[in-house]
Each structure stands twice: as structure tokens, then as C-alpha cells.
Length: 119
Image 1 (tube, rainbow, N blue to C red):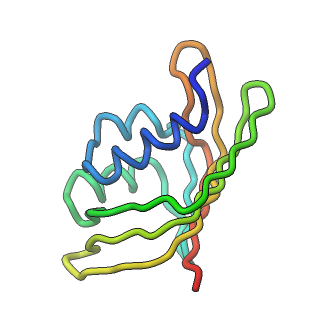
Image 2: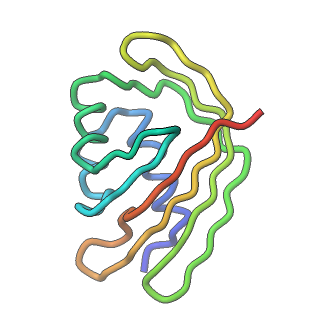
């Protein structure tokens, strides 16, 4: 079984690269992502990257905590993220909590995620 920390770091790399194909494989079809007042699906997330409405240019991991229990896992990421949304630049210190599921065919996939900015 692939290490969940490795899967998390592949996700970060795919976000910075804007690699929609890699993101497609890392996001479960049932994904629900909560950020601020919004709730987003896998299709929403992929569309943001595909159209470049959201571009992540830099992601620096400060802290990563990983918990695995059988075929379920959770990652807690803390770090700095930079890029653009709708063409407007952003830079924020972010905290992400991601819930992952694993199967032998598809590997680790995110089924639920939450993000918030931190000071």
C-alpha cells in the first residue's frame, strides 16, 4: 500500500503543476470540499484547474500529520499557498484536513476535505 504521506505530497505537486489528470485520480467521485461558505464537488475542483480559474503557483508544507486506520486515512496539512483565483493574486497560510480512502485498484483518493486560512 502506498504511504498516505506520499499520496498527500503527490496531491500538492499536482495542484502546483495544474495536473488535472493526476488530480482526477486522487479525488474520489463523491468528493465534498468545504472552504469558507462554499461546498464544492470533484467536478468543481477539476474545472477550476482545467480552466485555470484557480492557479496554485507555490505550496510550502510546514507541517503534515498523517493517520491511517485500515483503508481510511486523514491528513492534516499546514503551510503557505500562493497563486491566483479569477486572475487575482492570493497568498495565505492554510490548514487542510483531508479524509482519504484506499483500495488496491485506485490507491488513495480524497473523499472529503476542509480548508481554512490561519494567521
